[in-house]
Length: 486
Ligand SMILES: Cc1cc2nc3c(=O)[nH]c(=O)nc-3n(C[C@H](O)[C@H](O)[C@H](O)COP(=O)(O)OP(=O)(O)OC[C@H]3O[C@@H](n4cnc5c(N)ncnc54)[C@H](O)[C@@H]3O)c2cc1C
Image 1 (cartoon, rainbow, N blue to C red):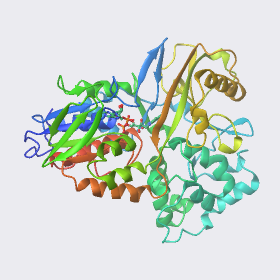
Image 2 (image 1 turned 30 degrees about the horizontal axis):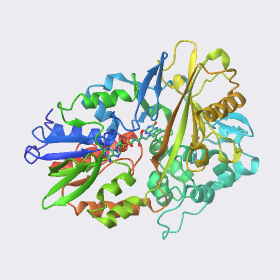
Image 3 (image 1 turned 45 degrees about the vertical axis):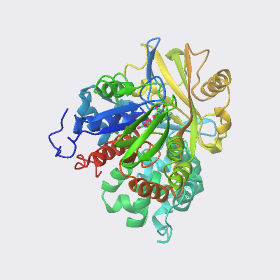
Image 4 (image 1 turned 90 degrees about the vertical axis):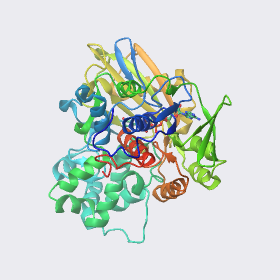
């Protein structure tokens, strides 16, 4: 598994390294450590009985069910690079090009997102002008984005709501931006940080004076890059044929026997001279040269409370939200809508009980038996925490009602499952970048410690992989991997 592109001088030193957390970040860190330093002794501690963290794929009654992430973006190279290294790149499927569009609910009806509207950027005049989603005044206000002055240089961060209303107007924000963007982060748009969550849009405003100006000035290049940065282009999304769990399985297959310890929560970390003392909740204590903490921030804070209290306090400042996904299998004839798209999003102003629905089996082949469709419906998020508490029967009732009204779903789904992700989604609030810089500075002062995972610099699978691989390289003192500057 040695990677010839790296000097292995330091990496070949025998080291004992603990990785705490077996989600994609912990797995990617462990794999990178083992690749670069085959003689290192890497021990991965996972609290639950399975690897993958939130990533989980199951096969049920002929359906391939993703319980959380169901794809990853490829314009950031790190997910793809990992799959290449694992030998599973040829198993990646693109999304169906014929159905690459999304709908948005407006006054109880579904309408296409106007062609060329990419999360925050109106780039084609005609589809917007003819769309019933915005009033005439709302369209004019959006077009006037061109004349809105750039923000004052003193503004160091801003919420999505403030940015979008300032540049595009309230109507475009409420009807398009809020459902398309904050859904990705299950966030409260009044708190979501532009700088942390949508840095490309934040930068282009400063650089070009506006979003439309940026798209024009660069003859489309910046438009493409904004679109890519936002993850709005379905063509850039891929998933393994057998689902995201395939990446987890391929990673797990790389680990030497005995290196993964399932059902072994880590309770405490302590510095002991040059070493790290790790204590499991069963009370076993072991010493390591280095520790990669690949946990959600609140758990990382608990572990590090005795090591560095201010660091733990800052970790504790990162808030989390959750979502519930209802997974329904229908026969196609039960649904009136032709479902020739990937799904729909629901603006908050519509006051409905769901955030979005994704027609999984219309995005990727092999997700549902012939003649059936797999629909994943999202509830909760930062704005509807009340819906995270309801039981499965109530989730089912709400989802059937909403799908009935919006896509004409009739009768009972023959498959119905609920995946709950309470507290699984870090919220990048205004000021997040500064908070993470403070956390990283304090962590860097503790030799042999790395913090990785979705809490810090990107929630997507590629960003988690990137942070993990970079941390592994830093711990071993080797040159950064290709693309790691990305
Ligand atoms: C519903 C949902 C949909 C998503 N959709 C997408 C998508 O389509 N595309 C995309 O790119 N990303 C998506 N994401 C984001 C992405 O999947 C996650 O950000 C990423 O998988 C998180 O990985 P992680 O390793 O940081 O954390 P986790 O997956 O949370 O892993 C942390 C692990 O640490 C373990 N652990 C906790 N405490 C301890 C302890 N004390 N000791 C040992 N182990 C411990 C946990 O059991 C868990 O296994 C989605 C996320 C969710 C929740």
